[in-house]
Image (cartoon, rainbow, N blue to C red; front, side, top):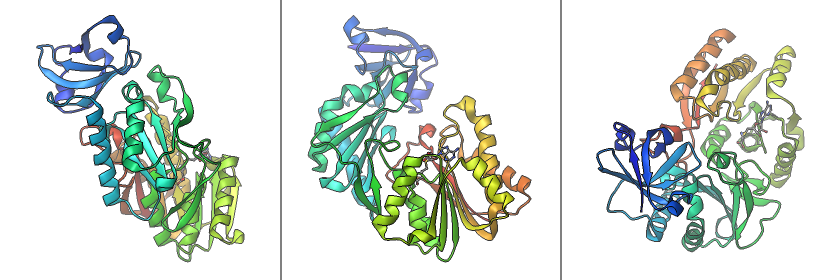
Length: 399
Ligand code: SAH
């Protein structure tokens, strides 16, 4: 048996049920040498006085040296735990998610699987796309995949474990078929009545930004008769939603030519009029400035940038970038217009994000009010003890 003993006082975060054990908190690790070096081996974590704290997956190469499977001494880490947790995760999605066949089935810590993401595209006849981002779930990959197939009835499982976080766990970047058939170049999904093509092999993350589903719906509900500017559009998620909702014209900007091509493909899939949409391959920071110089204005603007702050050290620089685009966005907004603005940086809190936006409004010299606070959909749960999980936050502002 592997035992991780913490330094005195370092049990506090675990007693608060934070699920990570950092290498700096550990006094010593005891067990057979082969166990100690096996990534993902289950360890008992104990306080300096020997008190049981948790069972956790040991990750010998990572700064996050162990991730908690359970805080209950009576709960074993075994096939039954995997099955139980998958069943529980699926039951919630069935209950809470409608109008789509692109759903996040498992979202890491909040679903009891630290470092695991499983997205479902196209239901039973489609594909499950998984990211194994920590040594613990990597070690249990085979039983996890078997249980996913048994519980969902979907036989096709594809792996997209090519996120750089794997490297910090000492795991190689891998992609490929885990079960069933190779995915096609495009899987067609329908979200809120809009069809999208998803390339699960080459697209960002697992292929689609499932987390913005509710926000795309909100844009749809507010788009009628409006001109729209969608910045960082990727494959046009918000653009298509706006057109479906009756937007008169949409300009979509992204620096990925491939994503823009899929955006245009999505136009065709929905039979939308090409004359209503313009796809621009450009840097948003520059494009917003030139739109301002041209004196252009819009009724509805979406700013959904990539993660500007990947670590707490990058927060300051990221804050300047968020402020910059939001200042420009507010200036491009017609009075009465709506700005949907987001940050997906876990290191930027909702509170800080609001402060940044307030600063942007001050410097832009405009009045704004917050109509709504926005977040990811309910298939992206967060644990109350793990604020890092609350990565996506947004505001709906009116000028
Ligand atoms: N709103 C999208 C997801 C956006 S992801 C949706 O709902 O599907 C962020 C996007 O920003 C990516 O497509 C990436 O290619 C693009 N991007 C990153 N930096 C950029 C920049 N400086 N200018 C333009 N696009 C950028």
